[in-house]
Image: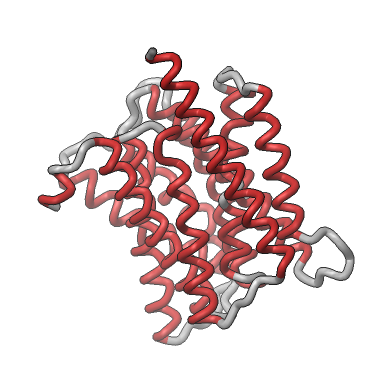
Length: 296
């Protein structure tokens, strides 16, 4: 912690976003390790644990549990869309390679750019639009939209999960601009998700062994760590300076998937990884270059 305090803001942001990538990789790994449990049940426990951590953080900091004026509708929208993103991601995790599911979820920054243009009126430049289109092509290499792909439905849901995550991040950006507390944003989302998925758990509970309880508890802890560190990352530095480092999760997922689950993505998935990561790096360079010219 002392070392982190001595770093400049951008370095702190990079450290936090890489830590969030580690946490989310852990979350995805434990979700998959929990075995044959319905997706909604996994989503409930993931958010239920994160809810208590967020509540503890709010009470410890003596922050208010009341949203700022005008923020409630964006909290609701963020929660609805974000829940869709988690469901899509978790379903994909049970059906396809860990690295494939993680990469499809990492389409979210591109969708965040689109949604920011549509709803926040932030201009998308032609070169950025081209990068989004090329990244979409990269996603198709991972999804492999043919009838021969037995996991096509799961891949599409994983892609939709990334799209929903992009919409949720747009809402988070709007809330941040309105001065909303990041801890409260995490708490409301986790509480909303737990409340919505609770009826399924009550009426269609799937018996879990002790080790499955432990796996889902660990998934919730990792999820809480991921949400707090990624919120901190974007507090320390703007997205254009650090977002590319979020793709380190794909590296962590590929390593974990290979050693824990024996996942070996096919050549087309690797082509998709390369295309999407290349576009992410290119947008990172382009956005920072444009920002430097503005300052000059």
